[in-house]
Image 1 (tube, rainbow, N blue to C red):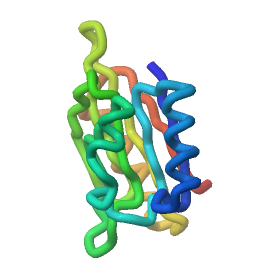
Image 2: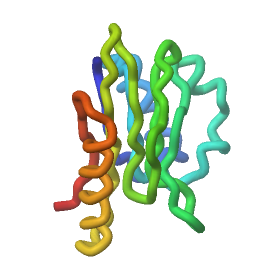
Image 3: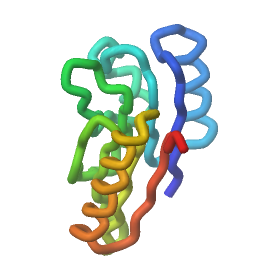
Image 4: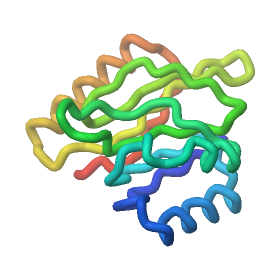
Length: 140
């Protein structure tokens, strides 16, 4: 299982999209997490990702702001989102009769807000027993 996390700081410009395409084709990750895309996902043609063998499956929730964390997977995977908030997306992924849990993180730079992230992740680990992977920008 290959995971790739990139704080792209804007995916709307052609050089960033070309760089992302090259990364996907070269490394062939199973899961891709894009932080700070600085645009709405709907503005990217669905066929662009699909032609590369990928699909979006979840986004973080930021109330009045656009998501700043996109979760994308290869077409043959079917992750199930188990929790979403403004700092993370957590999901389960069955592989070979084993369920794995993954949290993609884009932590707040506020200590108070980040404490809530750690509390949420601890609660999720207690609720969903199994192997966990945490990947992302933890802003420590």
